[in-house]
Length: 131
Length: 281
Image (cartoon, rainbow over all chains, first blue to last red):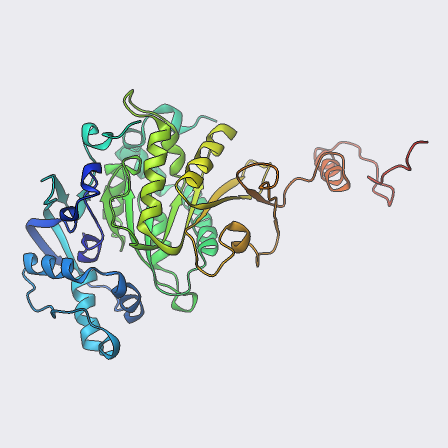
């Protein structure tokens, strides 16, 4: 699972939708892997406004990348290739292969195996709102 | 022909054997890639985007998303969701570039609002029309899926879902659920009336500088007949090369061609073919 994806996933349990603690999900016992991908500055520029920087900061700290700048790169910094390359490395090339994602609100654990996070919910959590 | 949807739930139907067969069949691969290109054409993405692939399976459509050349706005980055672990296993073996999630789309889409530029789904959402256990209803699953999808797309984003409805009831159920979730929904039908008929549900999320629904999207495309049923009833529907109304010239010509191709004797066409008679006195 890419770090980029973890910046967009929120807890799938219905009752967590209204809680701010359900995002971001927190990595536990994460094993990391680097998978090289072609560098695409255009994509990084496109996706950056939608990234939740606080959440990314939290995730990066949990995974042991403390070098992230405090605030989101803006304006001229988007033309600096090194900044974009660093982001590319963190967001797209860093994969979590094993471990789990934990929701802070309900405590549900999403297991990650071979890089695939399991978001299947047991039926009592999934269908809590059947009309 | 039997429908896999009628046999088993998707996570059980696509076991190791079935997933491998699906991915190695060149016929299925060809159909899948054609449909993916068509969906990409409808999405009309101009810059490298983040795309959600709903029911990504073994990543057949995802591969195409990763391979869009840069002059066509690619390559795109995608995140795939699928309910079948075996399918995802095949995707892992094929080393696709996208990120994979094991998730049931009928339980919602676990992303925060405004995550994706676009969504694509090839031959997946008709599975939602089946209730596998007694504690779920297809309507509720469709509703959760479309509500989740609507939320996770950014404003002006689009989703194209190719699907195989069993009948008109399923088709209307899916279309209705999308409209209820807030989408501008329309159906594009390729090759209607033939065995190869393909339905694409084209969904838009507000804004985007377009007319807001499918009529704006297909505006520049050739070969598309617009059948806007909004004046008559709710729901809109469009079709490509739509069969003409029964009895008019285009319909007669089509029927004659069909008969001729079957080897029947058909009267030659003339300027009188299909012409209205003068009004009877």
